[in-house]
View 1 (tube, each protein chain N blue to C red):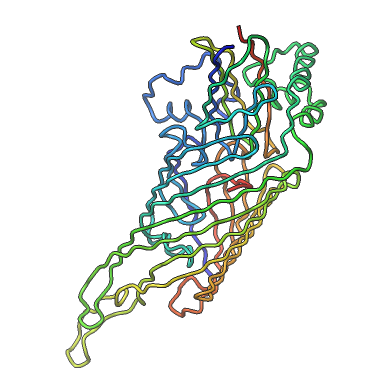
View 2: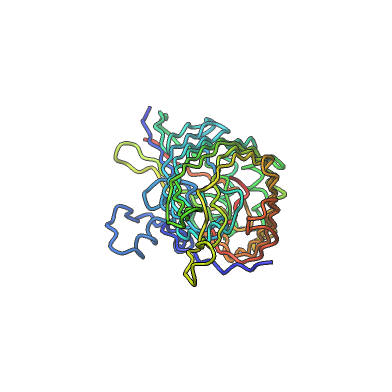
Length: 353
Length: 88
């Protein structure tokens, strides 16, 4: 059993700013020059890499669930009718190579740089367009409360602030009850990883570069009213595993000597077919959890990961949490075997991918 | 008819916009539509998580027809709203 250290997050994306501007300033000048990082955070808004409308939104430094990495993402989006398409390209690099390697036996990119292409389709047929009636509610509320429809427009925020008893009526004009969201996508990733090791025969230091890659896809469904989602994922990947750590010493009889210690021999290559099932559930406004089980059919590696999120502020863009992870790996050299418990700070919880 | 440019900046999973009863196809959050003079309604929907935000603006020529910024409310994983515009 192992305990992981707390991980801290530094977000170059402006995750912290969303609540700083509860209402949109009509006269705001987003083109104003940004003089300080704090000002940039305040001006731009947005949090994670979900949407890359600006360079600041596209950059992220994230530590937490799958180790620590920095990534930059660019993408294009098309919204047409009930479907939403997103195509993105992400480049990333680990920030804590040693820590990352301890996190996941099924992640070939924990220790190297990577480039990822991803296409995601989100389909939702639960929209209801009763614009006149919905706007009529806001006009009624404006007359009754004396609060004009402000910078948020006629939306749930306005109704909740000024006539909360009518929120159900407003939502029924906007959404068909009990409709679900389906989502799916394909991903491809290629990486570059440097392995340093000791030659088994001489003990000399050596290094090799390897290129792990993966391709895969996922499908899922979210039951919005129940605030949960299910997803299935398949990934075929080529990963590289460092040699067993040992001391390489000269043959006995040469007296006392210092033996170099490190991975012995070049990394070994392995092909993996990883199937993953995940269940995500939000509990009220302050908690969420997911249960993620993965199995590699090639290496008979299984992993169960259960992070539990404490959502301090739904719009802050960050979550703290505790997690339990169990890894079963028949490879006796794998130090990840067994239970791991830890705390983390990471990107905010979302039902969708 | 007037040419109206619609711009959306959203941080969320997915979003959609309609002008009156017609869905608008947005490419990277932008679209140009032809709208007859008069009062119209631009409706938006978004999926995401509480706090995910959306900015929506409509302009005709150099004239701003309206803009809003709001977010998905606490306890919700979707949001929607309506902006009323008048095209001259």
